[in-house]
Image 1 (cartoon, rainbow, N blue to C red):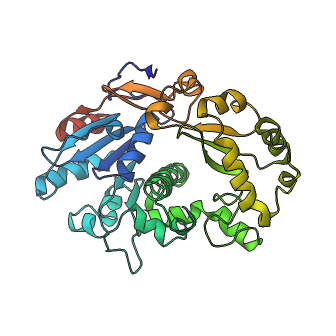
Image 2 (spheres, rainbow, N blue to C red; image 1 turned 135 degrees about the vertical axis):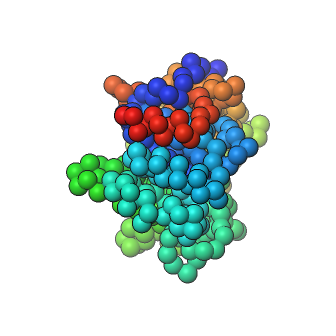
Image 3 (cartoon, helix red, strand yellow; image 1 turned 120 degrees about the horizontal axis):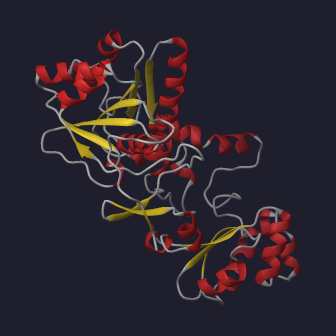
Length: 367
């Protein structure tokens, strides 16, 4: 069962970012997710939307929603006045759109020199592809990340975790917070160019290191961490469910052998890559002899480095996830709780509220 939280109003934020004011120009995917993370941590996030739009779902939590017409000069003037009192701005338009609206960095930073101006795009603000349309799958394709993920026969998109949210949202949040820290020392803001292709490339740094060291080769399912090794992968059980093992270290591999009954001498060759395919087939046959629940009873909680492969609905019921309150009931739906956790200034999932632009401007100018 999922934990429940008492909805809090978006006007009284708590968390380590309480007091930080951010203006978000509504978009899709990584921008709203980044703003959700910041709002969960206590930042006051004003999301500017078109009239009639109502952001919904977990990524909208913690916001003050303001409807504006950015093609109307008086509305743009109100947005500029709002940005005068902001600490940061987040926008995810194609390069040049904010400038055409009269809200580009030169204009905004000219009025509020301490503002951190964050730009979230797939290809970045410059380069041959800067003006091209794209999605997560395209951004991770040109980094080398997608080519390394999937079965031997073809790459498999890893949802939109690597580009949109890992390479996009998380790098945007990191850049925004770093720039805010620097602005606190220098008194000067700056533009943060958060490109998903940049972030996705950064995420695979370790694999470039492994390639340089001769410990990684191109070709899926031919390396230790991409499904090639018998001791690091996903296996089907007798009733169609799956389990995962990651028994890399010798002591963990030894426990895998003990609990799975892998006494055959052939399993001594853990790091002999020429034997991985045969050992993987042997292990495939072993894991199919029992159900997922039976393997959980044998291995879960041990040092095998084991876990059942759960669906999202199953994950909400797992005892560990329940004990930590990883999932919550909020706004009538199950969703992940705020992360990470803070000992003294806890984050909170707060309900969004709708406000008027003039109200917020007056409130910020009065303080």
